[in-house]
Image 1: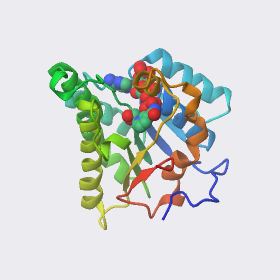
Image 2: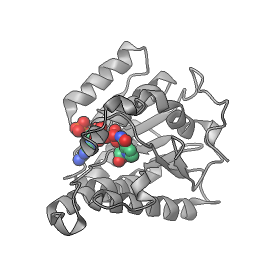
Image 3: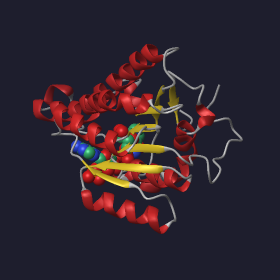
Length: 252
Ligand code: NDP
Protein backbone atom coordinates (compact mmCIF):
# COMPACT_ATOMS: atom_id res chain seq x y z
CA UNK A 1 0.00 0.00 0.00
CA UNK A 2 1.38 3.42 -0.90
CA UNK A 3 0.41 6.62 0.85
CA UNK A 4 -1.19 8.86 -0.10
CA UNK A 5 -3.23 7.07 -2.78
CA UNK A 6 -1.82 8.14 -6.18
CA UNK A 7 -4.79 10.34 -7.12
CA UNK A 8 -4.95 12.13 -3.75
CA UNK A 9 -4.54 15.93 -3.71
CA UNK A 10 -5.42 18.15 -0.76
CA UNK A 11 -8.43 20.43 -1.17
CA UNK A 12 -8.23 24.10 -0.16
CA UNK A 13 -10.14 23.24 3.03
CA UNK A 14 -8.43 19.90 3.73
CA UNK A 15 -7.27 20.95 7.20
CA UNK A 16 -9.94 23.54 8.02
CA UNK A 17 -10.60 23.78 11.74
CA UNK A 18 -7.44 21.85 12.63
CA UNK A 19 -4.68 23.14 14.90
CA UNK A 20 -1.22 21.73 14.19
CA UNK A 21 2.14 22.27 15.86
CA UNK A 22 5.26 22.13 13.67
CA UNK A 23 8.73 22.02 15.21
CA UNK A 24 11.56 23.61 13.26
CA UNK A 25 8.93 25.70 11.48
CA UNK A 26 11.24 28.51 10.43
CA UNK A 27 13.15 26.87 7.61
CA UNK A 28 13.34 23.99 5.15
CA UNK A 29 10.70 21.28 5.32
CA UNK A 30 9.15 22.68 8.53
CA UNK A 31 8.58 26.05 6.92
CA UNK A 32 7.05 24.47 3.80
CA UNK A 33 4.82 22.21 5.92
CA UNK A 34 3.64 25.16 8.00
CA UNK A 35 2.72 27.11 4.87
CA UNK A 36 1.03 24.07 3.31
CA UNK A 37 -0.98 23.36 6.46
CA UNK A 38 -2.11 26.98 6.69
CA UNK A 39 -2.89 26.98 2.99
CA UNK A 40 -5.19 24.00 3.61
CA UNK A 41 -6.97 25.90 6.39
CA UNK A 42 -5.10 24.88 9.56
CA UNK A 43 -4.10 27.10 12.43
CA UNK A 44 -0.37 26.43 12.79
CA UNK A 45 1.69 26.70 15.97
CA UNK A 46 5.15 27.60 14.70
CA UNK A 47 7.81 26.27 17.08
CA UNK A 48 11.48 26.95 16.47
CA UNK A 49 14.67 28.43 17.85
CA UNK A 50 15.11 31.46 15.55
CA UNK A 51 12.28 33.86 16.24
CA UNK A 52 13.00 36.08 13.22
CA UNK A 53 12.49 33.09 10.89
CA UNK A 54 9.25 32.13 12.64
CA UNK A 55 8.04 35.73 12.31
CA UNK A 56 8.72 35.58 8.57
CA UNK A 57 6.67 32.39 8.23
CA UNK A 58 3.94 34.01 10.32
CA UNK A 59 3.88 36.96 7.90
CA UNK A 60 3.89 34.66 4.86
CA UNK A 61 0.88 32.76 6.20
CA UNK A 62 -1.08 35.96 6.81
CA UNK A 63 -0.09 37.36 3.40
CA UNK A 64 -1.44 34.19 1.77
CA UNK A 65 -4.74 34.60 3.62
CA UNK A 66 -4.25 31.68 6.03
CA UNK A 67 -5.61 31.45 9.57
CA UNK A 68 -3.59 33.47 12.09
CA UNK A 69 -0.77 31.22 13.33
CA UNK A 70 1.04 31.36 16.67
CA UNK A 71 4.78 31.74 17.17
CA UNK A 72 6.34 29.50 19.84
CA UNK A 73 10.01 30.39 20.31
CA UNK A 74 11.77 27.38 21.81
CA UNK A 75 15.30 26.04 21.58
CA UNK A 76 14.90 22.27 21.75
CA UNK A 77 18.63 21.85 22.49
CA UNK A 78 18.34 23.57 25.85
CA UNK A 79 14.66 23.35 26.80
CA UNK A 80 13.87 21.58 30.07
CA UNK A 81 11.03 19.19 30.78
CA UNK A 82 9.61 21.73 33.23
CA UNK A 83 9.50 24.51 30.65
CA UNK A 84 7.81 22.18 28.15
CA UNK A 85 5.23 21.35 30.84
CA UNK A 86 4.70 25.10 31.31
CA UNK A 87 4.33 25.52 27.55
CA UNK A 88 1.75 22.73 27.40
CA UNK A 89 -0.14 24.34 30.27
CA UNK A 90 -0.10 27.70 28.47
CA UNK A 91 -1.35 26.08 25.27
CA UNK A 92 -3.99 24.20 27.28
CA UNK A 93 -5.37 27.43 28.67
CA UNK A 94 -5.53 28.97 25.18
CA UNK A 95 -6.83 25.94 23.24
CA UNK A 96 -9.00 22.96 24.08
CA UNK A 97 -7.31 20.50 21.73
CA UNK A 98 -4.45 19.89 19.29
CA UNK A 99 -5.07 17.99 16.03
CA UNK A 100 -1.53 17.48 14.84
CA UNK A 101 2.10 17.44 15.88
CA UNK A 102 4.85 17.36 13.27
CA UNK A 103 8.21 16.55 14.86
CA UNK A 104 10.41 18.06 12.20
CA UNK A 105 13.25 19.96 13.91
CA UNK A 106 16.53 18.08 13.80
CA UNK A 107 20.25 18.62 13.97
CA UNK A 108 22.60 16.96 11.51
CA UNK A 109 25.64 16.95 13.81
CA UNK A 110 29.05 16.02 12.41
CA UNK A 111 29.58 13.90 9.29
CA UNK A 112 32.47 11.99 10.87
CA UNK A 113 33.37 8.46 11.91
CA UNK A 114 31.57 7.48 15.09
CA UNK A 115 34.90 7.10 16.88
CA UNK A 116 35.68 10.75 16.17
CA UNK A 117 32.27 12.18 17.05
CA UNK A 118 32.50 14.45 20.08
CA UNK A 119 30.39 13.60 23.10
CA UNK A 120 28.98 17.14 23.05
CA UNK A 121 27.75 16.76 19.46
CA UNK A 122 26.32 13.35 20.28
CA UNK A 123 24.38 14.70 23.26
CA UNK A 124 23.10 17.75 21.39
CA UNK A 125 21.84 15.72 18.43
CA UNK A 126 20.13 13.23 20.76
CA UNK A 127 18.65 16.08 22.78
CA UNK A 128 17.05 17.82 19.79
CA UNK A 129 16.20 14.81 17.62
CA UNK A 130 15.09 12.34 20.28
CA UNK A 131 14.76 13.68 23.84
CA UNK A 132 12.90 16.85 22.90
CA UNK A 133 10.51 14.91 20.65
CA UNK A 134 9.82 12.48 23.50
CA UNK A 135 9.22 15.27 26.04
CA UNK A 136 7.08 17.36 23.70
CA UNK A 137 4.94 14.37 22.73
CA UNK A 138 4.39 13.49 26.37
CA UNK A 139 3.42 16.98 27.55
CA UNK A 140 1.10 17.54 24.57
CA UNK A 141 -0.63 14.15 24.84
CA UNK A 142 -3.58 15.48 26.91
CA UNK A 143 -4.30 18.14 24.24
CA UNK A 144 -3.91 15.60 21.42
CA UNK A 145 -6.32 13.26 23.24
CA UNK A 146 -8.97 15.99 23.14
CA UNK A 147 -9.00 16.03 19.31
CA UNK A 148 -11.44 13.78 17.46
CA UNK A 149 -8.58 12.28 15.42
CA UNK A 150 -5.08 13.61 16.05
CA UNK A 151 -1.96 12.81 14.04
CA UNK A 152 1.60 12.66 15.34
CA UNK A 153 4.29 12.52 12.66
CA UNK A 154 7.93 11.82 13.50
CA UNK A 155 10.42 12.83 10.82
CA UNK A 156 12.83 10.05 10.03
CA UNK A 157 15.55 9.52 7.43
CA UNK A 158 16.90 6.82 5.15
CA UNK A 159 19.85 6.48 7.55
CA UNK A 160 17.37 5.85 10.36
CA UNK A 161 16.31 2.67 8.62
CA UNK A 162 19.69 1.48 7.38
CA UNK A 163 22.79 2.86 9.10
CA UNK A 164 25.58 4.27 6.97
CA UNK A 165 29.18 5.20 7.69
CA UNK A 166 29.79 8.78 8.88
CA UNK A 167 26.15 9.48 9.79
CA UNK A 168 26.97 9.01 13.49
CA UNK A 169 24.63 10.56 16.03
CA UNK A 170 22.14 11.67 13.36
CA UNK A 171 21.53 8.15 12.02
CA UNK A 172 21.39 6.73 15.54
CA UNK A 173 18.88 9.43 16.55
CA UNK A 174 16.67 8.54 13.59
CA UNK A 175 16.69 4.84 14.55
CA UNK A 176 15.55 6.02 17.99
CA UNK A 177 12.87 8.13 16.30
CA UNK A 178 11.58 5.06 14.46
CA UNK A 179 11.64 3.14 17.74
CA UNK A 180 9.69 5.87 19.53
CA UNK A 181 7.09 5.86 16.75
CA UNK A 182 6.71 2.07 16.96
CA UNK A 183 6.42 1.98 20.75
CA UNK A 184 3.94 4.87 20.92
CA UNK A 185 1.80 3.66 18.02
CA UNK A 186 1.60 0.20 19.56
CA UNK A 187 0.64 1.66 22.94
CA UNK A 188 -2.13 3.80 21.44
CA UNK A 189 -3.54 1.22 19.00
CA UNK A 190 -7.15 0.45 19.84
CA UNK A 191 -7.35 2.75 22.86
CA UNK A 192 -6.87 6.19 21.35
CA UNK A 193 -7.93 8.23 18.34
CA UNK A 194 -4.34 9.45 17.98
CA UNK A 195 -2.42 7.97 15.07
CA UNK A 196 1.37 7.93 15.00
CA UNK A 197 3.61 7.47 11.98
CA UNK A 198 7.12 8.26 10.81
CA UNK A 199 7.98 9.92 7.54
CA UNK A 200 11.29 9.79 5.69
CA UNK A 201 11.38 12.86 3.40
CA UNK A 202 14.07 11.43 1.11
CA UNK A 203 16.58 13.91 -0.35
CA UNK A 204 15.16 17.44 -0.29
CA UNK A 205 16.79 20.72 -1.26
CA UNK A 206 17.20 22.35 2.15
CA UNK A 207 20.05 23.78 4.21
CA UNK A 208 20.52 20.42 5.93
CA UNK A 209 20.88 18.51 2.66
CA UNK A 210 23.24 21.12 1.23
CA UNK A 211 25.41 20.85 4.37
CA UNK A 212 25.43 17.05 4.26
CA UNK A 213 26.25 16.94 0.52
CA UNK A 214 28.24 20.11 -0.26
CA UNK A 215 29.37 18.85 -3.69
CA UNK A 216 25.86 17.97 -4.88
CA UNK A 217 24.10 20.52 -7.12
CA UNK A 218 21.15 21.61 -4.92
CA UNK A 219 18.67 21.39 -7.80
CA UNK A 220 19.31 17.62 -7.96
CA UNK A 221 16.65 17.28 -5.29
CA UNK A 222 13.03 18.45 -5.09
CA UNK A 223 12.08 21.53 -3.12
CA UNK A 224 10.18 20.93 0.11
CA UNK A 225 7.14 22.62 -1.47
CA UNK A 226 6.98 20.00 -4.24
CA UNK A 227 6.51 17.22 -1.67
CA UNK A 228 3.89 18.78 0.58
CA UNK A 229 0.80 16.74 -0.41
CA UNK A 230 2.24 13.87 1.70
CA UNK A 231 2.69 16.13 4.75
CA UNK A 232 -0.86 17.48 4.38
CA UNK A 233 -2.25 13.97 3.85
CA UNK A 234 -0.77 12.74 7.13
CA UNK A 235 -2.51 15.58 9.01
CA UNK A 236 -5.79 15.21 7.12
CA UNK A 237 -8.69 12.92 8.06
CA UNK A 238 -7.94 11.07 4.80
CA UNK A 239 -5.11 9.32 6.70
CA UNK A 240 -7.23 8.43 9.77
CA UNK A 241 -6.57 4.72 9.34
CA UNK A 242 -2.82 5.07 8.79
CA UNK A 243 -1.12 4.16 12.07
CA UNK A 244 2.26 2.74 13.06
CA UNK A 245 3.69 3.08 9.55
CA UNK A 246 7.23 3.99 8.52
CA UNK A 247 6.47 6.02 5.40
CA UNK A 248 8.54 7.47 2.57
CA UNK A 249 7.75 10.77 0.87
CA UNK A 250 9.72 9.77 -2.23
CA UNK A 251 10.40 6.44 -3.92
CA UNK A 252 13.50 4.83 -2.35
P1 NDP B 1 16.87 22.26 8.01
O1 NDP B 1 18.17 22.20 8.73
O2 NDP B 1 16.80 22.96 6.73
O3 NDP B 1 15.76 22.85 9.00
C1 NDP B 1 15.67 22.35 10.30
C2 NDP B 1 14.78 23.22 11.13
O4 NDP B 1 14.86 22.74 12.48
C3 NDP B 1 15.23 24.67 11.14
O5 NDP B 1 14.12 25.53 11.11
C4 NDP B 1 15.96 24.78 12.46
O6 NDP B 1 15.96 26.06 13.05
C5 NDP B 1 15.15 23.83 13.32
N1 NDP B 1 15.93 23.45 14.49
C6 NDP B 1 17.18 22.93 14.52
N2 NDP B 1 17.60 22.83 15.78
C7 NDP B 1 16.61 23.30 16.57
C8 NDP B 1 16.48 23.48 17.96
N3 NDP B 1 17.49 23.23 18.80
N4 NDP B 1 15.32 23.98 18.44
C9 NDP B 1 14.32 24.31 17.60
N5 NDP B 1 14.40 24.19 16.26
C10 NDP B 1 15.54 23.69 15.76
O7 NDP B 1 16.43 20.75 7.86
P2 NDP B 1 15.40 20.07 6.82
O8 NDP B 1 14.26 20.96 6.59
O9 NDP B 1 16.17 19.52 5.72
O10 NDP B 1 14.96 18.81 7.70
C11 NDP B 1 13.68 18.70 8.32
C12 NDP B 1 13.56 17.29 8.82
O11 NDP B 1 13.67 16.37 7.73
C13 NDP B 1 14.64 16.88 9.81
O12 NDP B 1 14.07 16.04 10.79
C14 NDP B 1 15.61 16.09 8.97
O13 NDP B 1 16.34 15.16 9.74
C15 NDP B 1 14.66 15.41 8.01
N6 NDP B 1 15.27 14.96 6.76
C16 NDP B 1 15.69 15.87 5.83
C17 NDP B 1 16.22 15.43 4.63
C18 NDP B 1 16.67 16.37 3.55
O14 NDP B 1 17.17 15.90 2.52
N7 NDP B 1 16.53 17.68 3.72
C19 NDP B 1 16.37 13.99 4.34
C20 NDP B 1 15.91 13.12 5.39
C21 NDP B 1 15.39 13.62 6.56
P3 NDP B 1 16.80 27.28 12.43
O15 NDP B 1 15.95 27.77 11.31
O16 NDP B 1 16.91 28.21 13.56
O17 NDP B 1 18.11 26.72 11.96
